[in-house]
Length: 329
Image (cartoon, rainbow, N blue to C red; front, side, top):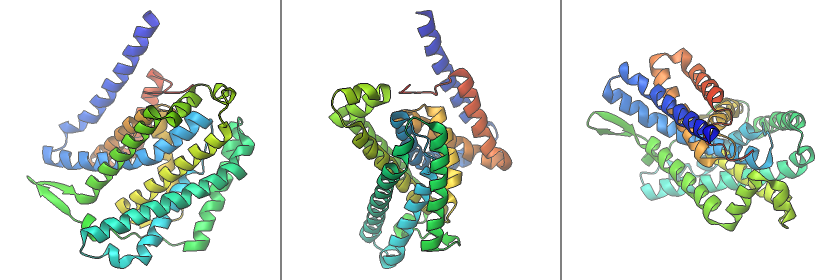
């Protein structure tokens, strides 16, 4: 009983401490600037959530450390870049419908292409090293090198400028608070993905099997479910989410480059560690903490932006080693 109460207080104190850390910048930032930074931070958090949720599901269910996730992120960005390049008339058209259509086509193309790449990666490479984290790190790191070099072969080694659909460009001035349109779109996309994942995981039979697999995959297999087919599907979904995150982030940052996945993979692992393995809600909360903190600190003390997120991760791990919302073992 006492242990249960202590666990609850640990989680509540951790969340309260995180909220306090997020609110501290109010002391040094004007309210209007703070609102602008907050919207940007939520948008960045939602983009990180798209990547981190895939990492969390793959690690939480499959117990696989997939260091190739960043390369899949970059592949998603480049597939979207290619779609925009070939449908540039729709991208620059002064038409909401054409802009939305090309954005939707780019999302579908990126997610499908990278999901298929994820299936190949899981079946050919990852399946051989289940249960061995050291080999998983080595073999997926090697896969990252190959995938990044393939990007250089297909698209070239140079940085490319990512075009923003005309309707998504620009901003709204709401009572002197600058709100960029695309950041609002990022928030909507992130919220929709979170809602869909929650619906699948909690309201469908497949979701029940996935959640059961997080707790005891041997029991799931004993009940007659093909755990390896499930693993392949989960890996493909995680890869697709990485692709969506890569496309959305490339538009957000206005560029694509072969090594772009490495930076965001680091942030994704920080998010997953903060939120807890196997938890979609944990990934969302962790991503928002990282996104908001990064933007606040980058405005006040630019050189400390990345370090503060690592510090928050360490503090949370000291108080709650499994993360805020750990769902699995």
